[in-house]
Amino acid sequence: MESKSGFMKDTQILSAFHELAPAADSRPAETASAEPTLVFDACQTGVVLRAVLFVEVCAGVGAMFVSFDPFDWVVRVALVTGGALPATLAWLLLACLTKRLLARMARLWQYTSAVLLGAVSGLYGCAMLAWAGLLPSPPWAGSVGSGALLSSLLVAGLVLRSKGQMPAHTSARLAELQSRIRPHFLFNTLNSAIALVRAEPAKAEALLEDLSDLFREALKDSGEPVSLADEINLARRYLAIEQVRFGERLRVQWSLDPSADGARLPPLLLQPLVENAVCHGVEPSPEGADVRISTQRRGSIVVIKVTNTVPAGQGCAGQGLALRNVRERLALLHDVQGQFRSGLKDGVYQVRMEVPL
Image 1 (cartoon, rainbow, N blue to C red):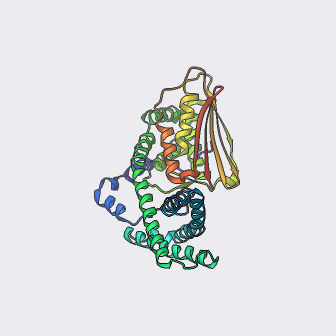
Image 2 (cartoon, rainbow, N blue to C red):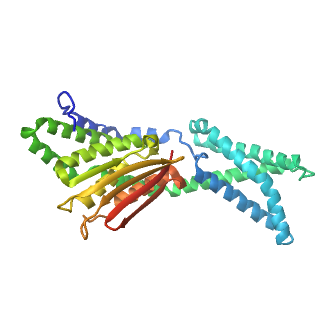
Image 3 (cartoon, one colour):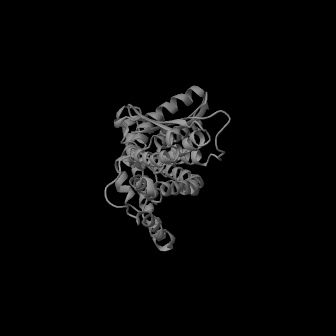
């Protein structure tokens, strides 16, 4: 590892801890929570699918009350769909295009805007059917009212779903905080640095600088997504620290696709997976293990893999907190577009993630 020039900034670790001090004050926390936040993101694939399905279900149920037989029901559902589907897609498109504007509004104005957009979209759907000659007497007022009602119900459902995810978000947050600071990792790293101070002071300095940078990133209280490139850099620092401890027992392979670096991830997502690979693969085995991190862009999807060999019948025990944490935070950020799978086969354990680019 190339040593950084200059002397070690011994205040870096302490400054990282001091950054958490304002969080203990209830007033800044209240101020942050009072800031307007986006009620729902219409640009997400999961929201689009749920909105279309909800409107189609409402159309199907409503058609039951005026249909004489199953064939008549199919015809009426098709007619309603001809207006409801373009109206729903128009509502989603408008909500997506005005996403940044809505995010700056208070929640009440976001709800009001969503209902007004629904009314306009309902009017648009009715106009489409009237223009096609399928409605001799277009129900303009009814279309405006139904558009406003359906949009209000849809927004309410998305808000309730978001609140239903709060326990999962809280659990993921607690697991994240638990995985941020591993006392045994800090203890082992400091011991390695002490052993290197006299024999290889430059290497000890680089080790402590990597530790400082790692803790600074780990202790940041930011929920904003980060780039895959940033996560790779953090994983490199972690593995550089563990390389000093395990030496040749830790054999790392990188297979990185530069075109995938722009993918967005929740912060501190990759490092716990790499730490798991070291814990279950390298630490229990006298011969060590191979750890491979790969990224690959496939169209608009980025595939991320963390693979490690596992010695037969060995591996440190765990409760799966890190994996659950990663899975939940990935789902909270990317919804149905984020895929997470893990499994052990033929002595090789692999975690595979897919995220949109």
